Length: 465
Ligand code: C2O
Ligand code: CU
Ligand code: CU
Image (cartoon, rainbow, N blue to C red; front, top):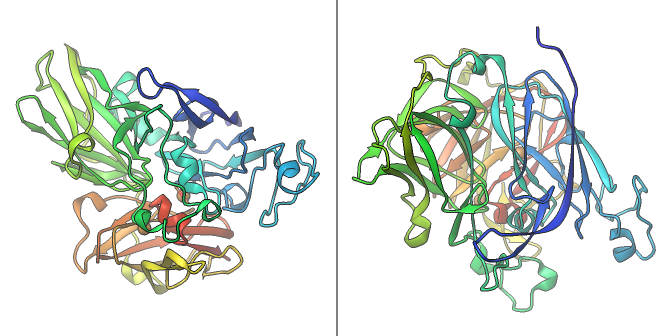
């Protein structure tokens, strides 16, 4: 038996100047002074508490994406961690200090530090934490507020997948920089808007022309001629990728998917290329055994052009012994929900609409309003949700993992396998997802994970009662 312990972590959110591009200084908003933030590792069944201290000049909210969290720790967009000077700056004479109860008009809770407690009652999976403040999520993530959180469990440990230095989390994010090395983000803040309609060019979301992997532009990583486990996260605000692994002599290596957003698949799925939308994760085995020492394998983005076609590269540095394996059966604990288990089918359209009289994005015709309840489900119910999109929208549900039942009226695609928390709808496409709403009662969210779409209203309240 493993001892049950309670892990505690402390993270300070602060400004830091980082060297992201060689020779340049980039002011960023960080978790603990790094980008990405520190990687948290937790173990299934062991609750942890992460104390966030906000030393940034703005309120923040922390959400653990993919976490089966209680509503109190889920990072609702108005559940702010307010910095010390915010009261004085914005509410005339409010005083700082911990738990001083300063009132932001929209805030539910306002404090300088906040404990986020995670039950960690969930399958091993790659999760991530990021800012989730109402209307400001996209610029906050862009400035650096994102980090990884890996949940481990005994089932996964028993499989002999590549581990240790051969397990590589890869947080992929595009960014743009100005000539002096600062991050370049076109402002979406209406109070800073001088030209009417300035939102319009960014309706599709903000793209960068530099691809960062774990905070470095187009890195080259040295590997053994052996299997590696790549834990891939697309942490970009709006960019979609279609990844492939290509050797110098033009050979495409198999991407053997062993896991999805919410952990291991039932059985591996082999891909030649793998689409990944914002917030999606793929757990992929890539075998370098067939590459000779000194050779390279480039990870390319088939949807990119010019600089955004390259993502990163691996250089095979040495031959090595490999004890890892990819078992034909990975996990037998996946839910087996059937369409006939669903007590309700709901329809949601995701499309362009109005937000505060300007251009925005809406779900079911409505722009996000924290004061409105959009969907009420009963704890424990199985439901089918039919989602239909006008343009590309990666749709994410908080709290629950789901399975993709159908896509475009037909079968799901190979990369839809397993338990997901984000499904990428292509332009004009519909998809059905099925899930059981178990976990906790309270207020959660579902939204588009194009971060600009989310800030422009494409989010809804999900009430579990
Ligand atoms: Cu990754 Cu509600 O978000
Ligand atoms: Cu989430
Ligand atoms: Cu969207």
